[in-house]
Amino acid sequence: MLLKELVDTAATVAATRSRLTKVEALADLLRRLPADEIAPAVGFLVGRARQGRVGVGWRQLSSVMGEPADAPTLTVADLDALLDRLLTTAGSGSAALRSTALRDLTSRATADEQDFVGRVLIGEMRTGALEGVLLDAVARAADAPGDAVRRAAMLTGDLGETARLALVDGPDAVAAVGLQVGRPVLPMLASTAADPASALEVTGEASVEWKLDGARIQVHRRGDDVHVYTRSLADITHRVPEVVDVVRSLAVDDVILDGETLSLDEDGAPRPFQDTMSRFGADAPRETLLRPWFFDVLHVDGRDLLDEPLSARLAELERVAAEHRIPGEVTADPAVAERVSREALAAGHEGIVVKGVDAPYAAGRRGKSWVKVKPVHTYDLVVLACEWGSGRRQGWLSNLHLGALDPQGEYGEPGGYVMVGKTFKGLTDELLRWQTEHFQSIETRRTAHVVHVEPTTVVEIALDGVQRSSRYPGGIALRFARVKGYRDDKRPQDADTVGALRALLPGA
Image 1 (cartoon, one colour):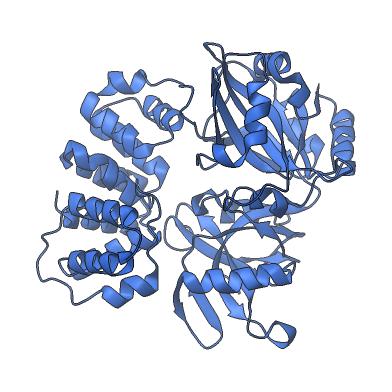
Image 2: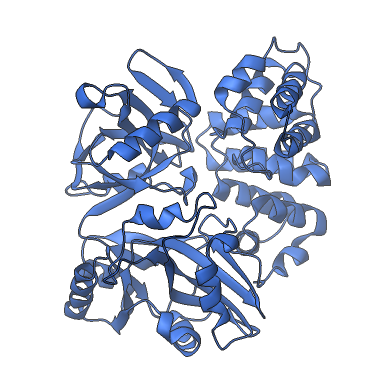
């Protein structure tokens, strides 16, 4: 298929707020795609090419981008092949080879195609083709049940492969997709509440568990073969041998566990989140040990547990990993939940997560069955730009421009990010040095005082609340925002929404 057809469909989707129009346009495109171009095309549309990031920044791209072609000739397969080439080109002379490959392809692209290719390469696709809309389009194009398509995508963790399966192999193949040890699934997510009593009103009787300030992990074991994945499904097994050792010591043959890992200090208190995340980065000497804590089990010795209630899953978790369970109590009493919250905070943790005991495991969804409660509001936002500092921070990028996800385009472009505030608080000298280098490497443009960047960096922000404001497009401004840390384990599409922030407004 010509790339122009993909570009035109993306433009149609971005130009309308009608979900039905989006679904119909995408379904029509999917029906016409050759089998081997379905997965790449879906990856391009949702901003996650199957190759991942290939190390191309805006500076490099703009330096090789020449005059656009007059007529479209590029195919979806051509762009997919370019990403393969960029991913595998390394070593001496690779920079020149990569530039030549980029120049050759972009010289064959029309103006609209050049813009599309650029956004794919630097990870700035915001067409409004959100995953939920595309899943509906896959179901429509394949004449398959929507629930079956969504479940297959959650269990494979791969929307492109799910689309290919549905369109090529048909609805029966989609329905046959099941949980598979060794293939990570999208994690279940939690909504938020102001206090334990409010959370229990939503969930009913619940397991009230400590919320650790750690990193989410999903661990798969088959025999002695163990793999550890992050919440974004990246394989980090080789970086966490102590987690592997713990899981190998369990009295099971096959198991899939969901939990957190974090580092503890000499007194058993949690170290700062950044200490944990540093272990997930470069392969450095392991001076900091990680401890796993598990709060759910999805499979054990041939038995899938996804559709069983949490009460049944917790019974199995107690049986196979009792020593490594996150502390908590099952209760419907707000006073008990409040006590568990105080105990978690006293131990140095973030708060609690209240989980309905009757709920199944909803992979990839943020519903009302899990509700997190923290004494201070924390949200994951995306850095849109940063300002040069003054005084002691002269020469460093300091004040961050923060954006919240706008899934439906209520305040801007569908699937884009709406600025909701700024902050320079909570930044250590180490973070200032890091972000000065990092944000200049992903800048898209700059003015005298502001460096605008690709919206790909997630930062965890603590705040006291929000207030109404006409200063920012979302109609709100953050109150007393401060940086808790950068979240390398999260994707920009995992950021909190502007709607979630607006819900903090009095009377909302």
